[in-house]
Length: 200
Image (cartoon, rainbow, N blue to C red):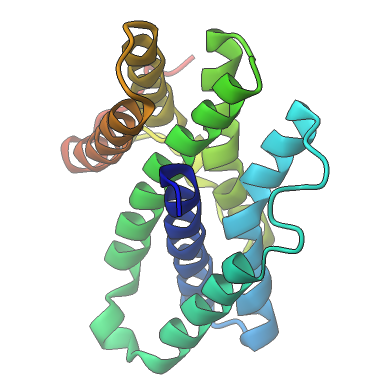
């Protein structure tokens, strides 16, 4: 398995966990949990791939990814809510998924010969829009739009550094890893320090 596939599968699993945890937090049934897990795991990447003109979509006929979503559902179903500490667990899994899918999306754009600026934008869309859709479906204000923390901005920061590193000839495995770490770190630090963009 190559590095891109590994990042994709880990990101899918982590985002599916996030979606299932959100469903549990809102006391949804198993169908609602499956829907939120699927949307969180696939939503952003689907929008990104449609904009890139990728056909068929990357997740179609990929049974490994589907099994990872089902595994995430089963794990959330089995674990006790007190053990999960839902709010904190959702935040951490979402931050990790955000980093993984930002790096993955940007690399897919670079391979498709999209210019650097739009690669970062599409990487950010791929990372953040699945969670946006899941939040809308669960009738909550999306993290993407909340004041008091950085969400898409974390993707933009990490993604920009990834692109700059690759322009300097850094191996894409290293540049992606750096992007993932930066996105997760910025996301966590912004929540901890209440860092946000200025109001308009």
